Image (cartoon, rainbow, N blue to C red; front, side, top):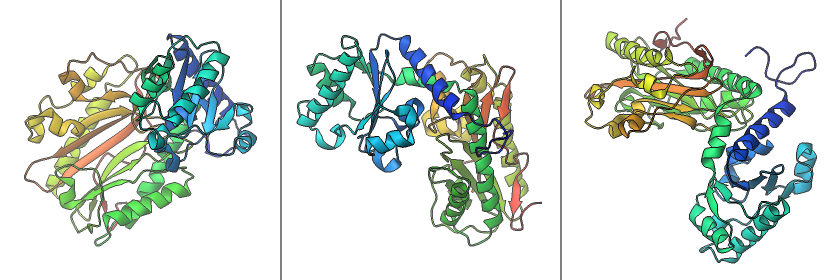
Length: 414
């Protein structure tokens, strides 16, 4: 992160016009490679990628907001906000904001219900307007896909899954997206700093989560998921969550600052701490986990594959004391990051087990790699994770909170 995060007149920082233009062009380029006439998406990340509109979390489940992208034109946004006000705030969308579409998820029981017919009529008119009514319609981001596909099929409009098209567009980040990912990772450092200062006997996992979230919102995030915070016996076996369990002297505490969206872009960073002085065994587990993580990180570069990463990780679930990979697949794992917490690529040993071909890493991808070490019958588990940018010659670690050794808190390590 070379500059500050806020707009100023004396430096060229994030160029938002360029961000919008380049993102939309990437999507158009991918759409042009297909036979689709248009894409219709209810996915919040896709809506933001194509229009920069923020679909608030309270509206996502209802699926009333969506975006229509024809191969021969610009995106049209359907939103629950007043269209004229949305256009005033987002002038680049002038003339292309419409009232929200009916929610099939909430109202349509069958493909012949009136709300389904209304949606089909709205989109059919747009397809005809853009001269693509005879081409398939790509559908993305709806949990009501079967009914939607049937409703369009009844009107003679074939539908296909458009998610792979959008995944391909979004996985390589533009220069402004990369800078936003750097900022989002820097925000996690404020959360970790506040949490480290607060760790002491008696504080609860839920208290630490609240402290971290407060720090994130103070840094300007527009949304964040709950942090993962597990301490003591909650660290082994591995789990995602937090509770009202109080931290006790000698507890390990692993924390994931995850999904903290800064202008849409989310990091994912795990760190493990100790409340008080760590034992030699706790340090052994920590070092083992860090070695596993960084052995994998060292192979990351443009042209490497997920299979190269798997070669650096344990080759058997028995390493963690399990008989099946399905029981411990999250223990050594990776995933893309961007406008969602789990973009492409997916880096999981289960893919190799299932015979899927290697997936190539490409310069411009932002990914997270995460590892876990904990032995059956023991109390302690360690989880670590870094957010990375894939570069031509290797990688850039975007997450900067110290990781070289287990940090002892109460009193805080200095």
